[in-house]
Image (cartoon, rainbow, N blue to C red):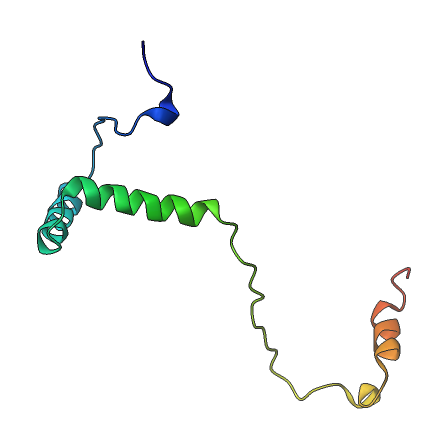
Length: 91
């Protein structure tokens, strides 16, 4: 009787990866005195963990070159600037 997938501790599979990547992975595994299997499992755990977490929103910093507000708006209230921005646009 087959066991449910969540109870299986190991599965055998075949994965095709580029030769150059395999050579690099084997070199890292040898240098770190681990197995290729352990290195692949660690890499999969990391990438799956990263993709499981929602990415934190970061607002891009945007600047506009210029000399500040136009003469008629310098020192004006936000309400005046906003009203002038939407003037004639149905708001």
